[in-house]
Length: 129
Image (cartoon, rainbow, N blue to C red; front, top):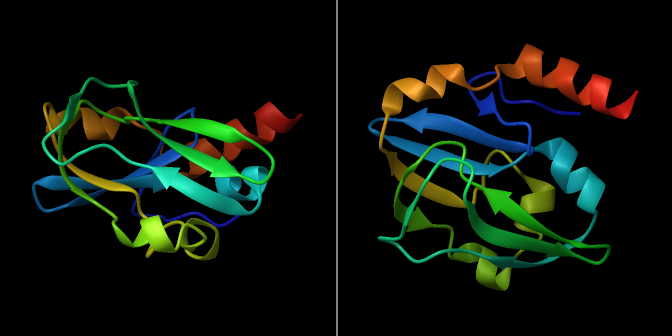
């Protein structure tokens, strides 16, 4: 399982990384491996506002469809439009080209309350035990 040391993680297997005043978000390597071949990604509209833990989209694979949840509350500032034609980018590069959304967080300081890479790795190990 690959992790991004600069990212923070949620129990729903999303990652979040600060980029200036915004946060970039996607699903973790562990989540994309569990889903296997991703065939469709449904994303919100720019300008949509969500609370922390709200579902903002859906990732569909050949095995299942899974909701994707906000790691923090905020307003969507960009979506990864490349995923419309190339959803497998989430499988190929979940922490890079496979990002899902960018958003302006309501409470930026809450970012520090998300799990770091070591805590997420321990969480996944416990979940699989």
